[in-house]
Length: 636
Image 1: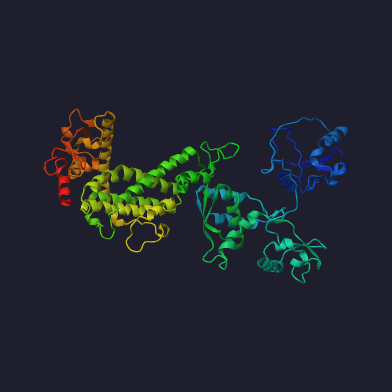
Image 2 (image 1 turned 45 degrees about the horizontal axis):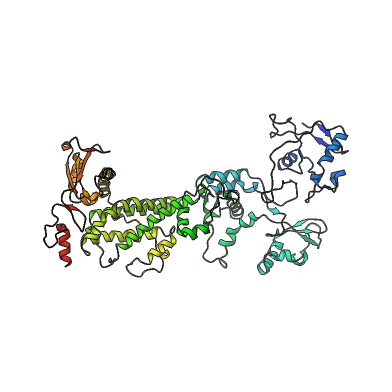
């Protein structure tokens, strides 16, 4: 360290040997050259050793006078001549061509040449600890975002805020023509603010320095009165990072806004960009972060996780998707995926989303179709008179409201989509709506069983249309047109409040009973499906079921004996003790339950399709069961 070396062919230019940890003994000779004027790491090492910053190549890539015999030549054209000069002086030990990685411009794909140039910087060290403290006062979604930006702030260098571009926000700096002193004072800033407010920031580029400097201004260093203006522009991250102040603190332009922002939302690359620059400008001025929460999402990739590009032919055009499938399917796809990671898009994935959408839409159609004669004011059944199954369905609805509301509050949009989808497919279509068909189609129009069902169907519809509005904005607006509403109806569902959980509908004992009944139902459904595959029955109503249950389950099933046929959608159910189960009964996944399924005796009712030995008992209605005969008689 400190050994002085003579330049091979430039007289008087010596170099000093310095040390640094990035030089490896595993690669190369263990000795590398550095150029403090042409590399970031080299510049930092040079600054540490107080080396001169020599940059003999100008902004156009040509050697300056510092380049000696190569002055005026383009740097890439001098390689052979430099090698020849080294050879002539006996300084070239070895020469070969290698392949290595080298940075290239992302836009034009040409190799990048590094030069040390004078720039304007914003010092970070003076308030770095304030920045780190501000990071911990923000809610980061997902939580790993906190560590990512914290480490970036902790390790970042001073912020280079100047750019050599001909467009952008100007750097409001003047230079004394006599001594070169940079002039930026409160007086010059206030004067420029007035000019910008009246003429816009383009006034900086349209006018000369003497038209921009405050009248009578003198250089604070030498008293000079002639000035030039800075030609560099501001780093775009500086002005975008100041947007919170421009938007949220100027009520004359943005009435009703307040600082700080509730939420910043961008892709995961913005921890280094917008999130970081906004935090820096805000803490520098106010000491506080400019946002209460920051949400980060991934990027859209193809089904194999590859970045989309025209060359790969894997681009999914959202406009084409909307033309083919509709905007709501695109919205549902976005909300169904966990945005915290990259989102996969393909024709296959969107087709699956379209199928999920179809099931949700069919649920809306069923609900609307069975409320055609229901007036929510005239026909509503009070909670205490609702049938127990309907009270359970209302409870399940409020469990969904509870989960969805929590998911929205926590920005877990994929949980919103999955919760509502599973509710429509499993709780409604596969169970509740299926069970209700008998009541809706076969009971008298104004009977308590039917109105009880319609009351809950209405509540489900009214809640679902509001829960899904942020996701399926167009579909819910379409549904809203057909929903009768008590009182004055808002012109749009977008103007409605979100549904809220009503604690009086949450009955844990009721929930426990029906959850146990549904376990039994699942076992029966499996047995019925097996018989369908064997072609023993075609429809569940062709079956009669015997349930052999342990003592506790027996008591529960016996209490619901009259409701079990409709719950299981079979023609008859018999409840027996587990000790009565014979060798031909079927074991289930429950230790206290066995069952037997056989064809239901009797004839099929032409109206409700339930098999009964009493079909035709009423001579006036020879092809229906007694229940349906009574309904028909009362209908006249």
